[in-house]
Amino acid sequence: MSIEKIRDFVSANQLEFLDPLYTLLWQKSISAQNDGVVDCANLVMEMMKELGITTQLIETEGHPVVFGELMDPANTFTLLIYGHYDVQPPEPLEKWESNPFEPEIRNARIYARGAGDNKGQLVAQLLGVKTYLETMGKMPINLKFVFEGEEEIGSIHLASFVEQHKELLKADLVYTSDGSLHESGSPTILLGVRGMLAIELEAKGADRDNHSGNNGNIVPNPVWKLLDLLETMRDKNGKVLIEGFYDNILPLTEYEKQLLKKLPFDKKSVGEKIGYPQLEMSGETYYRKLTMEPTFNICGVESGYTGEGIKTIIPSTARLKMDIRLVVNQDPIDIFNKIKAHVSLHAPDVQVTYLGSMEPSRTNAELEVVKTVAQAVHQAFHTEPLIQPAMGGSLPNYVWTKILELPSVIVPYANFDQGNHSPNENIKIHNFLSGIVCTAHVIHTLGKVAREN
Figure (spheres, rainbow, N blue to C red):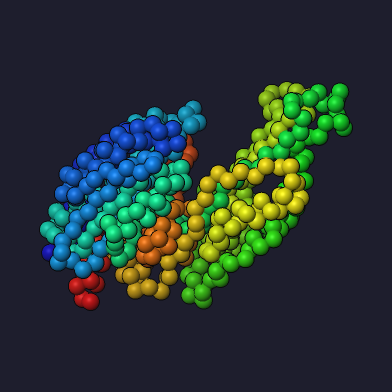
């Protein structure tokens, strides 16, 4: 049967296809607050069973994993599809134009928490399977599904889950639909992610807040302790000064450098979409900094009085949190130990606390299976996809590339301005439907190549 029937089927059923997405968006699944997570897992499981997928809920030390498989002994290739059903908290609620858990269509977009990250893309994957079965009759490859409920809190139990179920998860390729398309709207294939290390630095002064006049110059201010420490950790050009921080970074291959150079870049458009119109850099610099260089980001600072007016105190504590993005082959634990050693040398009374981490990963861009996926994405979108060696953000991709030792590709379906993690998160209906078509094309093309080999 013609693969073109896939597009026709999706077009004819687009209203019906919104129903399972709405069902999932209505169900809360805020992993950070353990709000509705198990109920959502059960919903996903029922959706999968309706498609004929053999499905089970596998408990972890945290939220459960929904595992499924659609197997045929005659098939020689197995694709593992990954996604997550948990979402970020919706706050600040006052900035939403509609209830975050009551999906609403405006301007040809579906607005709700999880619409883009990741329920819309997860449902598109499942409906891609449904579409293929309805139009082509039989799966040309084996499928396995891992949908977790902890991605938004760092996938803290996914690695142990994968370690414990290596035999169950045997596959030839991992396929993830998460994140956003390129800013230009072009389909994108991402071959890796930056890792992350989250830490907290805390400095203490007196055992209570003090009057800044009565005890000024007497009681130390812990804010200055942290500021002085930070100046030893990073220079004014952004270079991290911690000894050994840049050790072990895997350099780009010549092919990967060429891929970065091919990525389109509209400085004005990107600046406007990220809320920083004064952005000044070349495309090559932008992509190198975004995907291939580590960061040293302060994501929150807390100390003293910051309400209206003034309260003249010397605060007793100062605390800041950092999320440090890492690239292949930086090891988060190694970097944490180097930071601890640096702090011990320059400010031994500052406490360093490990909050969590995720390893970076990257799949070889020159693998034949990557070229096969690129061919499928090209056919689905009628546009040649952009291939990016890594994305700026972090996903638990290392569990596939390091623990299972599998190639892994990420093909986002959500629009660049999806607003994930923010109020008014959304997915364009067109993107959602295109994701269904793309999933079916990937399945078809992988099956075709497997038969030929």
